[in-house]
Image (cartoon, rainbow, N blue to C red):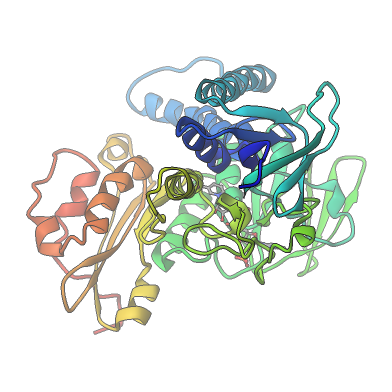
Length: 462
Ligand code: NDP
């Protein structure tokens, strides 16, 4: 057997790469992990974690409104963006440090610098300031876990806009912002900016935001965003952005113009394959430019695997972690494992947040023909006390022939927390009768999930 420097060489120390590296290392394998930026990857450094801190910071403004509704007098309000950023960065550095420690404890070697594949068993780490790790290394197996990065649209002046990467480090909070896109990041950041007092407009090219989500969720969310003061502009796109004395002037495809202090593009992310040398090793990409892999995350090259966003399957942190763990089980524990990508729950940390597991009504109708819908739109008890107007949406999609719940959709406080539990039952194949046999927890918002008895028939139907 050939003698290699390492049993496994992981490129990218994000969620998927770190999990795979740690598990492989704990099996006794000799493991290296190369990272060009900071350990922790998108999730920890410029994604889920800092975003959630921003959501927490931003939600305080509506909590103050609620407090006033309950008789509190709130004094002068001000938000110190610089202090928040500093504290956020301290916490991110702490978390990144924990990732480093965990890798070291597991016995993995951390190498600093951008890595590229030279051939099926060789990786080159490029020089990086402050690091002496540059060089060529051989490995029995190579795992690519380089994640994704934001895509910026191409039109005159687009370079004047920022992406989520920069939004985490803005030197000052803009007074007015235009957020472009209608997906997870756009809706989440529109809520963040709005909650922090920024005059916020959301611009989306399609008919309604959150394409791919259930249509009721999409229309409910658009209404709720507007109720909270976000201007939602649909069905048009940018023509150009110009720098003016007062800010950035966006001209849209309908010739409407907007002047804002910042334009943020949340127009999707692409697999980060640039400079990886995949062509040299003969690793194939799929039509979307992602690394093509089989159910065990193996590429077409026998010694190379890939996990996480760089494979563009389901681009979520816990999925990358599971894919990384399944790879390590298969290759280092003699336990062939593949992650089941079916019924992965997800949440949008918008305000209000969304929690979803399973199919939308449209997907279920397409797949099964006959489905029953149970749906409730209501004002949460917490808000009725003082006349708040926000509403929750809860919707169940039930397959008619065997009564299985194939979709649960929620918009409202704590939806991401609640959907985690709903996902267990849906993954186990729960029927509506079993679901309803679960007694309600009262008074809660979630009890509505198990108390919807009447099938929903839209107006004009049936
Ligand atoms: P999404 O794919 O969710 O949304 C991209 C949006 O940008 C879509 O609305 C798309 O429109 C629009 N768009 C794409 N290209 C252009 C263009 N050239 N001009 C104008 N609009 C454009 O990507 P995000 O960047 O929001 O997020 C990336 C991924 O990261 C998500 O899909 C998700 O997997 C993950 N993520 C998960 C989070 C969570 O779990 N809470 C949070 C953040 C990200 P159209 O619909 O017409 O294509």
